[in-house]
Length: 250
Image (cartoon, rainbow, N blue to C red; front, side, top):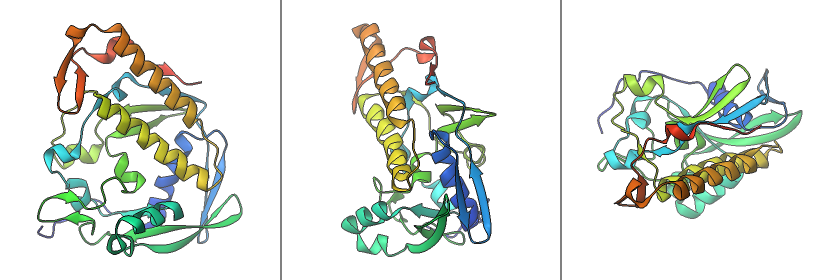
């Protein structure tokens, strides 16, 4: 893959703040993160809504797309468990990460970072245009179009493009959710819960997962066989999911 002009760049600290913004979106208590001489407080939402738009899916793999990996300068962040899991998959990929000190609620801790601000992400297979560590990728890669959207004190768990996706001409077209899409959705939220748990940050993740499961089962029961069609990865809904409405977690 040829070198590209990067449209956005993020510092190590920006990426640490971003990572814990994801965590705060499902947290139940306020927490404080320190990095170097800087500190930032993160507040839990007063209300969380699971949007009907969450019940649709996409896959970057369907398009062999690595635009985010190539056009966005970023710092990948993993916790200790995630790095250990990556080592079991590939020493070469895991060795890209170095230890970085942080403070969580006055307690010294650490994360592992890989800064690719000035190059294409090293996990990208440039010949085939896919991620070498798909399934082990950082949290920010798991949530490119699945969004934890905070509006004042409310977080909406939804799926929609980011501004940068419009700029990069993201090719993704959302499709009705399949069983495979449901499993990817719940595993993504569980990844975020596991990350938070390692740092002692409580979340409402289990309640969110239960409500997503219940809604998915409700949709399957309420629809007739004619509302489904067989596709690769399982049957999906042909019907617009908006009629089911959002789910208030709190």
